[in-house]
Image 1: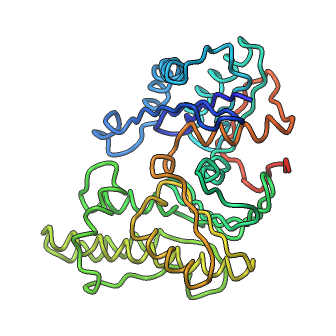
Image 2: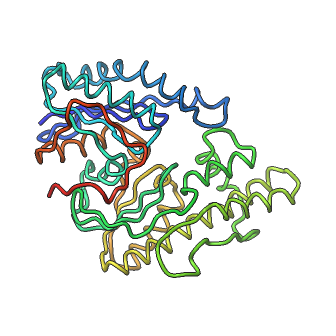
Image 3: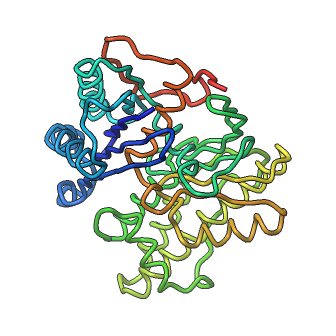
Length: 338
């Protein structure tokens, strides 16, 4: 079954072709970083307009890459939510229209389910059940996964997501957009022993996260210092260390509570080098395994939507002709397909 995947939930336009027999055939991504950089963050209206301009040209591009005609596509998957409502509506309208034109089924995909299943595209995919750490700009979740659609939320952020805290802290430190990668790069030069910031919500049971106070601690410290590159790097390093250690502590709790030894890490923050190293150490200590998507699929992409869409279309799920999106959509409300 050949599936076209379309991802437009935020500020990246991603499209891909996934074949159930041959795997991933082609994918393309357009980033809006330059568009939003002068504003210091994502401007929803500009994001939506750019998706309108870029989606169909990217679909034509991947069809050329894969050497197929659009009429060979057997299903269309698009991100239904969560995300920016305007951006979601663009992808849903285009995806549903293409499916109607080609007379093939369509399916709206949960953005975080796409991230959760992204490691399935790798040569050595995880097997169910496992614990998933989903950490991105808008979401921080720990999920027990027994199968596609069989999700139990173990913990989630009660305020800022990890990626959101990275971006906001970076902006307050005067770093350029996008702030998260810039802060992680700067932290490489910092002294990990100079400052110690709180590890939020690790002093109580459970797997929920809170990063808003950590952001405040970092900025309060920064405001007492001279704005030198050395001080900036040291604050960045202390902030990154606190986020990473907090995530590792929560992952340990989740794995021990579920008695599982497989951990899947996905989302943009999952590309963080220090987080990967600490989680590798954790998995070795617990005698388990940790799985990631390739770096280009940690951030938003069409390949994960195409794969997740295939799993649901193959199980017989279909969307009606109405175009509907869900800016807020609990992951554990999805129906199971296997």
